[in-house]
Amino acid sequence: MSKKKDDDYEVGYGKPPKHSRFQKGRSGNANGRPKGAKGFGASLTRELEEMVTVREGGRQIKMSKAKALAKRLVAKALAGDLSAIKMLASLDEGLAKRAEAETEEAEVAVFPNQTDEEILRWYSASRADGGLAAGEGGGEP
Image (cartoon, rainbow, N blue to C red; front, top):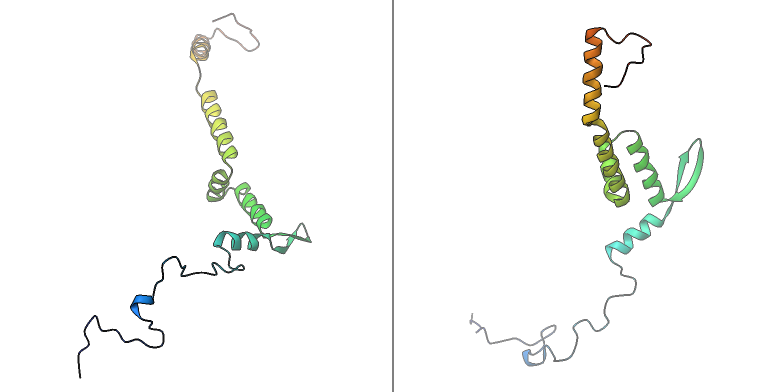
C-alpha cells in the first residue's frame, strides 16, 4: 500500500480539480431559495389562519385557530388562571399598563391620609367617652 501525500488529490466524479473548484464571482447558490420554501413565521401565520369548527353555546361556529386560541386564553383568565392573566398582560401592553395604573390607584385609596386619621382618632375618642350617641350628629373634630 502506498501512502498518498496531502497535496496529492485524486480527480474524478464529484472531485473537480482544485484550481477550478471555486470560481471567483460565481455563487454557490445561483438559483437562490426556492419560491415555495418559507420561514417559520410564515408557516405559523398560515397555520393560525386556518379555520376550525368550535362548539360555543351549544352551536358550532367556524373561526380561525388564532381567534379560537384568543377566546380560550381570555376564558381561562376570566376563570382566575394566573398564568393566563400574565400571558394576556404580556401580549397586550396597553392592558398591562391599565392594570398597573388601577393597582396603583387602589393602593393609594387603601392608605388613609392625615385628615382621615384625625377623624378616626376623634371618632374613637368620642365613642370611648360615650359622647356620641346614635343619631347624634356631633360637631367638627
